[in-house]
Image (cartoon, rainbow, N blue to C red):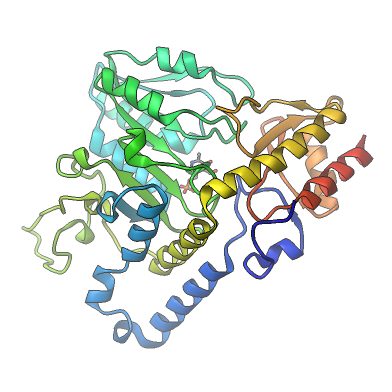
Length: 379
Ligand SMILES: Cc1ncc(COP(=O)(O)O)c(C=O)c1O
């Protein structure tokens, strides 16, 4: 099985066997070109290149690209610098009140829940962690924990530890039955898993750009459902939070009636332009095609790991599996496994006491075979 992307588009694939997208993706070369060009133009021409109109419109390419990717409209999308930042502005906007519960998993990536935990300490809401093991939680147990006292369910669409995938529509339905909001961190899914944001019923969906979207650090995107676009007051605000960003009057505060009300400041704007190029590239291949490719390679990896006697903790059922595969090797420390692979120029991550492979469009069956061969020599 060949890669879905050329070495021209992902030059680093020529230098290493890269199975570490869940940590940091290889960036699409077209994104790098767009960022470099934008930075060069600003450095050399300042506002002659980047005037007030250009700054007002600078997020448009990313609004358009991400909206297409998740079947939303550009007005549903807000841009910022990181997923953490966007989770923070939403957590302060939602302000789960005292006496209510914010529900998440005990194995979630800390960033996903920290902003809500911070706000909950302020308001007196309670954060409830449904426990899991080895990066896996029983989804049924999580669904059953949603009740009338739940104000927010804050969920990572794919868990970073095991790659476990949740059914967003099922969670949105249960949340809405009980008057709760569903806030989703899609940092480990967007770009690798098909997402229909409006169709799934999520209220908010946030992703950073430097993992499965194959973009740069320093750019992130957020879908905000239309019913929240006129009512939620952003937690973080600045001059960009206004309908007219150039009015610059301290007495003026008029948020756009769209997700754009959550865009509050300048940023390294070139990164947003680069991320738009990366998202367009993935869309041109098709996320459905990418997902099938990634899962086929994950199958090959799983077969090899089973043969080697590895203990795989990632789910294998069709509803919950992804191309993140975490395992341990009986009798060998996972850090040792990662080091051994690293010495052979095979890049994976240690996570807790597991080693984690993450497979994306630029990987091929050769990458999987090389990794398995290296593991065999470790045995
Ligand atoms: C699920 C999840 N959310 C968020 C992040 C980090 O977010 P950011 O760096 O964009 O703030 C990570 C990083 O590993 C992650 O796995």
